Amino acid sequence: MPVQKVYIDNIDGLWPIIKNCRFDEKIGRTRSRFLYRGISNADFSMTTSLRRNCKDQSARLEHSILRNFEKYVAISEPYISDSEWKAMVVGQHHGLPTRLMDWTYSPLIAMHFATSGVPLENYEENDFAIWEIDIVEINSLLPIAYSNIIKKHSAFLFTLEMLEQENISLEKYDADMGENSLIVIEPPTIDQRIMNQFAYFAVIPQKMVHIETFLELCTTHTKKYIISKKIKWEVREMLDKLNANERIVYPGVDGLCMWLSRHYYVT
Image (spheres, rainbow, N blue to C red):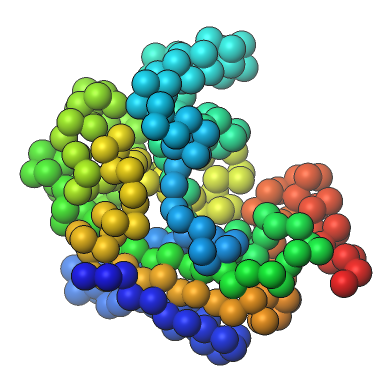
């Protein structure tokens, strides 16, 4: 089934994304079961930084990238030397090409990333987009062994500790997942940025070359909200009022400078 596309051309159309929660009878509370990813250009395809960087050589080069990252970063991050999973998460956080794909629990953070990362002089050239996936549906596609891990820990998402306890290597993961399933992990809070971004990582199997194809063929709840470029500045002002901006996403002097640069940009 094709991914449902929702076109939004006014600020009020964002409200269904923000309030999308459901009552969970198991816990007697209202919770969201959705994760979000912001794209600055609605025409961009979803791909990992590893595949974007290494293209069809990504499977061959991944271990070399991780091995060298572990070697050169050992002086500042010695705890990652015993785990490719840890190396991958830390590397992703610092811009290393990896198979991980960023998602967030917060639709506001997704909107921030969808309305940032492009030169301000070209700000209104393209529509932007928010992808929404249902983590319960994603988990329903898992091989039974992985479903049992989730159940054993009474969890919705995986952690690095869970993967390491089960002795799941990257090779085993790829063999188990094929191209029709994946896991989402909650990374350790190695700094304030991960916490503020409410960040999660989808672990893309090597055989899953086209992520949109997987979502189209294997899911029914996935949505792609395509938001008009005409309201991009209005959305940015709303996000600033809601405190979803560079100062929060990148806590510290760097984020402050990014926010000030945009805030005082002359159109």
